[in-house]
View: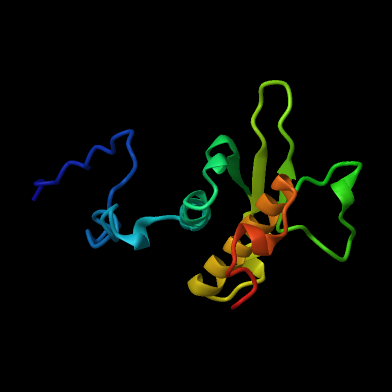
Length: 149
């Protein structure tokens, strides 16, 4: 009874399944399904949708960079915000060959909203407010439907 089974050689790569062979076999959803997008990608899509909506009315927005950052920078000057209020967005004026920038902060916006529709509305409000500040206009001028929700 010396019919021993030789031990299986363990390769240098990671194990693809658990020890019973029932582990994950592949991604949960294909890449084209919204479930496969990360929260950061979904948020960036909301910002892009808002910008595209405004660009139809204001073609000069094509010269402005729109950025999504996780949180506002906590530097020495704090750029005008206090401990009680955290900004949802900001602007950086154009200088030395760099275009103007509008920044939307993802985590403060996500914390203040419950669902995708509410988040989309708040993102659009933030984008409209920042564009209005950059152009020196009122938010109602930039988007006539501002504040109707």
